[in-house]
Length: 119
Image (tube, rainbow, N blue to C red; front, side, top):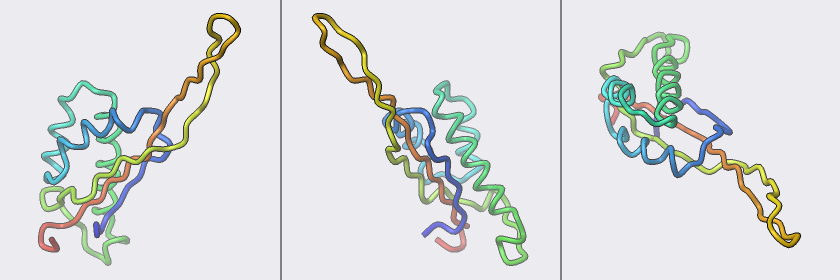
């Protein structure tokens, strides 16, 4: 189980698109993952980068870490989950009075960091 977590709930992007970027950084050190995401052109990379920075900030907070502050170089991304979120359902008028449904998808991004010495 990851020791330091961060979430982005109801991110307005399909989970399928963010998972492509999440697969790149899963299992990396936190600083390597941030460097990798910095040069990705996808919008999901920006969202994932912010969540990783938030998890690193949680790890560096001495109040959460029983008085010890963790360095970025010793944190590993052990838990990167992209789960589907709620959908906005809209109707698109089509020919001859029919209607097609449009699903505007969202996702929940979860990142968990664990120090190297606890893996």
